[in-house]
Image (tube, rainbow, N blue to C red; front, side):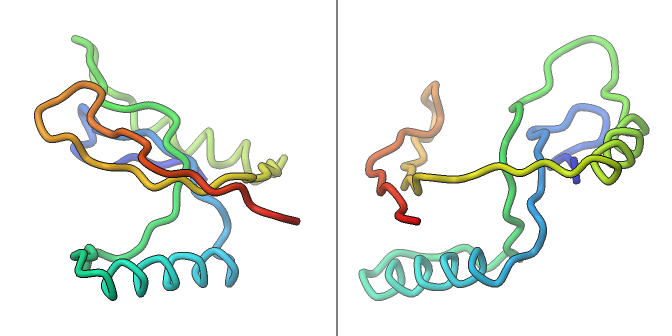
Length: 110
């Protein structure tokens, strides 16, 4: 379904969530384990797999969260299939635009 992160009036992220999938959760766990093994801190927030559709709402008009319900009803009526072929590791660049920079990408096999 569709959702937002951040304040409902001016969300930071508008996203699409995939169905919960064991393979996706396995990739997340393996990635987190490797990061921890190499001394990186892994977020302890709950994992919310998502595809970012838009970032940082800007405008004088409020974001209409009630339209999310309509979008989700439409999505339930006609599910989408999206095939991922790459996993990318991003670096957060504090204070820079763009904020995220891809530093490594791995093509997935069938």
